[in-house]
Image 1 (tube, one colour):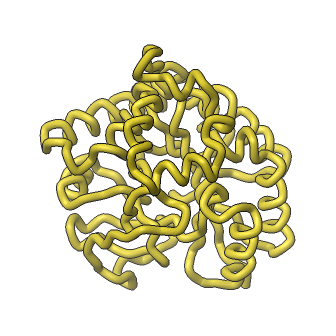
Image 2 (cartoon, rainbow, N blue to C red; image 1 turned 180 degrees about the vertical axis):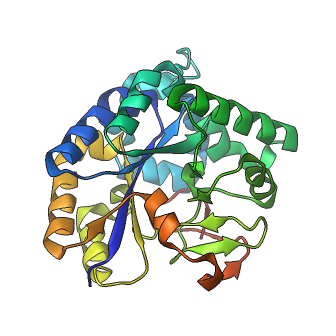
Length: 285
């Protein structure tokens, strides 16, 4: 029996929303596939990533993935020399259109860069305000409460886990763990991204991982980014979808995955962190 596999499509930037997302939607539509779109709603302050170039791992990632060519000059200046544009909040019609097409829409961020770079330094009040803005923006755009939340950069800490429990999510997708589990910190269901990103391991690495896990009973979640697979790696994304089709994997939404899982059969475990190949920051694993 082939694995159940979800496409977790993260929208991190204004560019990813405006130019990458339409390409992803068209590609999925041609194949009749549905995905789970995790949307950043607040300001795109991608330019603040320049501060992180002082970190050797981050600098190496930017060079290895050709970040200037991938994201472009304007994105590299948002939040510094250029005013940061709002992402999902600015396009409620597109959020509703994703829903009308049968895709899942979920919460990814208010300010993606703030969380990814500065989570350990955010106060509890700042965390609460961040979630409040994100959830309110989601509800205004989608006309309903969000079912899921996926943390930017798969970064979490115990304070964030306490805060996320206040927002009535049915599941979260915040780690790179091997299989779903229940968070000891808040009792929430975690459905991890347990396949690698194309920018971490390249096309062949992703294809090898999908093939290796094609007959697993553990649900598989493939992380996709509109800035990558929706732009410079569109052809590679087609190859990934071709492989998924040939292997006979059942592509479903993460919300459907959550409904199929019995929490009483899942491990209860606490936060763990570690470095993954190709990533500049520690992830929840």
